[in-house]
Length: 200
Image (cartoon, rainbow, N blue to C red; front, side, top):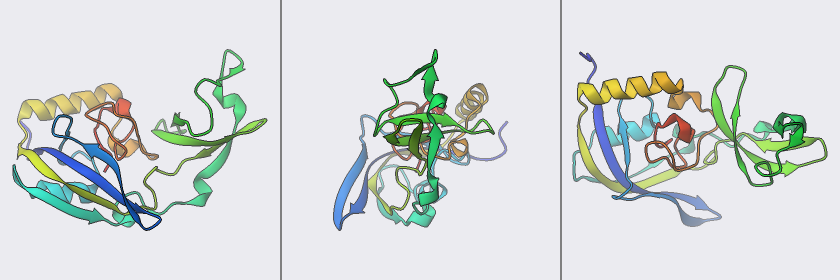
């Protein structure tokens, strides 16, 4: 029996940022493809969980997470040059997947997975931006709670089993995730293969 009560929350929303003084919608979770998560597992940003877990089914919401409660400041030092031979397959550079603008799954020495963005491909190096795609941005969420209730033991056990099988929790994915895999994944998800939903 699970001693901690976890909530099962399903929301639809629009995620807004401000770029060059203009409001921009950068992601949408529709009622047909909503974002769902269990509280208490780090499946989403702490501040996002805090704002949504107090709401009830049917509630509308709008809140802004400043960058220090989201993905922090953009750090120039996280743009690094990586040896090009890291990206070889059968002794040939992976031109198909490694090109300017590509989002590439990476792994650090501790086995943690994250994503990097290819900034440039040079003669012997690949310049990668390891900042989260939403680093340096305040995030405004406008949406609705589709469902909010206590999670049952089966749902909690199923999630724990999933994490154990994939050896990946959202907090493992330092660089963010992108992609629309996993539990309805979006930009504020961690790596889609974790199946941990959005990254907010």
